[in-house]
Length: 58
Image (cartoon, rainbow, N blue to C red; front, side, top):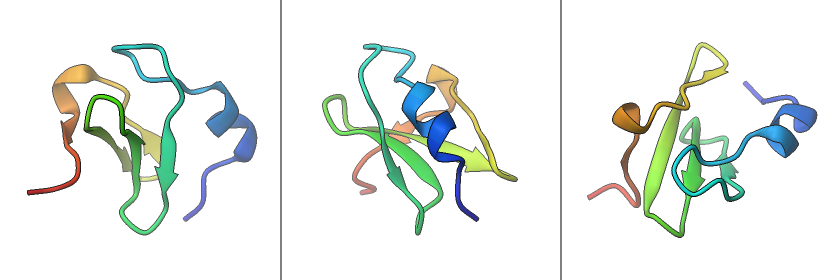
C-alpha cells in the first residue's frame, strides 16, 4: 500500500519537525536524524512519539 504523495509532503517528525523518509517495504516513516521510525497501520501514519521505534531496527 502506498501513501498519497501530498500527505508525504505535509507530514513531519513530531519531535524535530523535520522531513521524513517513506519506507514502503517496511510501512514506516523514518526520521534518520533521530533514528526513529513511525509505523503506518492500515494505511494511516501513527505520528505519536511514544509509538516510534528505533531505526534502523536492531
